[in-house]
Image 1: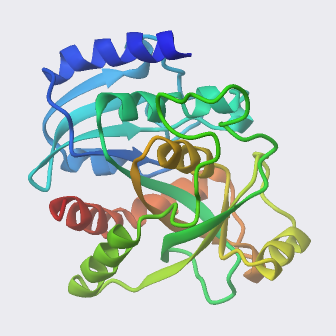
Image 2: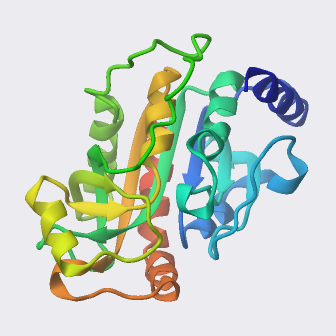
Length: 269
């Protein structure tokens, strides 16, 4: 693993001219168009990056973008990798290891999620302040990569309190109705049953999705600060469950809100 990380890091350093980006942005389902806001950019297909997995889900373009956003140098993942695609957790989180090895200190994550809070509606945006993992594996299982972090990383403040406050301020300044809550991470690519939606909310979740949690765990283990946002693209408790195409369309419609939030937080770094 360490050798693969070194190989990939070495390749990307040449493309970055040894400049460390201020943040990495992970763009989830239907959110890849935020990449259009990045200027002076270089686009690298994942297939060209040594040891990188390849996105297989529609709505995940599969490009790494280097450029400028809100006055800061950034990397952006236009699409991510999921456990349900058949990748193991170390493959899913491999890019986050590489970004940490490059010296990037901030991870900005986004996803499309199902609302399990009865107050949520399609098109809402939720600032993730905590999570619950129902994933069958943990990316830290196995030998600890002590070069990155300790055996048992503290997840009390997995979502950085200062970045949360910044996101709140940006939302207020832009007149954005920003919900907050806990994200429930699951493994399967099927939408949840009504009973599952009720169960998730009963045990403390506000939104449910199939990504983000593994990346957050590895980012925290690697000493990175995390800020994460969910676009609520369906609401199981109200019967508003759609197919993946509808999820992408809803995420696309919410793009301007997500762009304003991301740009505002990144500008403050």
